Length: 230
Image 1 (spheres, rainbow, N blue to C red):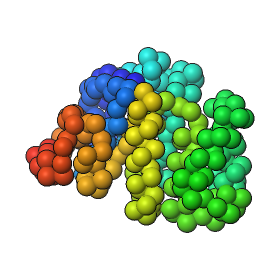
Image 2: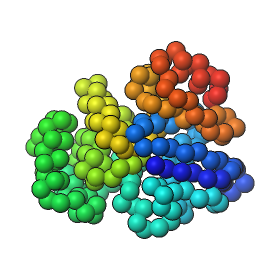
Image 3: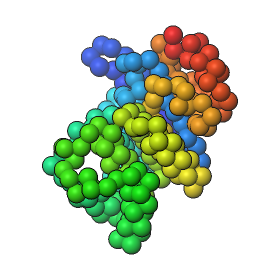
């Protein structure tokens, strides 16, 4: 669960959000949609990095996100794909499992399933700095699932993935949702959202946030996007 209450954020004199509030529930997959530069990454940063907030309160599983304890309740994969480049894939995932206090047996079993699902072979013991964009995306996403965090916050998680891996990622996210958890991700490609997400969150030109339940098809999403974001 993520609760945003009266969030305001500006850069210099430019207002990004003003008194924005919304509630994101467990058992849901949320897609965050809006035009380029409209504030999608800013909103995700506000949830995951409390110093990004000018005013307002954000709670994660009823814990103020300014408290250190809240960090164990979410995993954030930013759009930046140049992190931990001096570690191998194996070292990075081992680090994440320890950081999130996952038991060796549990994390080992989950890791083997993820490696198989994402077809991660010998590259696992190579440095992340040598990975392609798609391989970096996979290793950061595997870290999110390996962490055991209930709330996954993903900035453009489908970037760099081939169609097979997109289908695999969708299925894993659905399983995460069905286990009682929450997924929030930003996206530009609307056809990846239709018949997949439970809710679509729109940020319009005035940077107001609107929430739409259960969009059924791409045409409906296209219409909503045109009405709210164009």
